[in-house]
Image 1 (cartoon, rainbow, N blue to C red):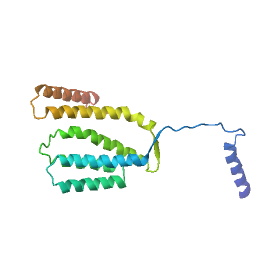
Image 2 (tube, rainbow, N blue to C red):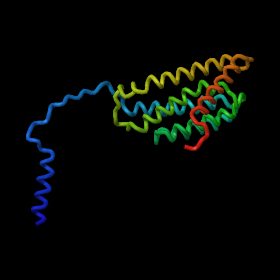
Image 3 (cartoon, rainbow, N blue to C red):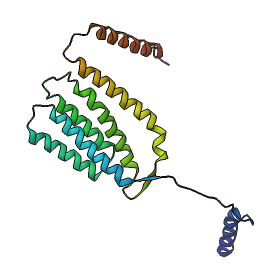
Length: 195
């Protein structure tokens, strides 16, 4: 009885996939590819650069900055992903609190694009193994957004660096207008009533 049941199940299974006609010929071409180890190496270098650049703005002991950078960089090399990227961002922020210009150090605005790059590279490094390859076309999807974010942050950082220490009353008015627009957007979207 089991033998005939097995034979019937096998026949049913094969009938689902055997169509009696040949499969169509499919051609696949892969574009230019980037090895996964390049993404991981770029991630490790970016993490080290972020932590060291933030540490260079502080009055902390140099050995302590090197220790922070070394620990986070080794973690990024061993287990690349969002975890080491976020810890590198927090470490850089904590190091910048030791800056002479803290808490409003304008260096934050030119370190922000590097932090964004660290976060994006951490995502890619966690999704692509060192032995795999990723097609360059996959980067084009988010490339425009990434370039706009980094360019805008660099422009804001450069202008803040140029205006640091000067009285700029029109910039205060612009900031008030921006905060009012942000508040208006938040209030318009959520009026406080339960849904």
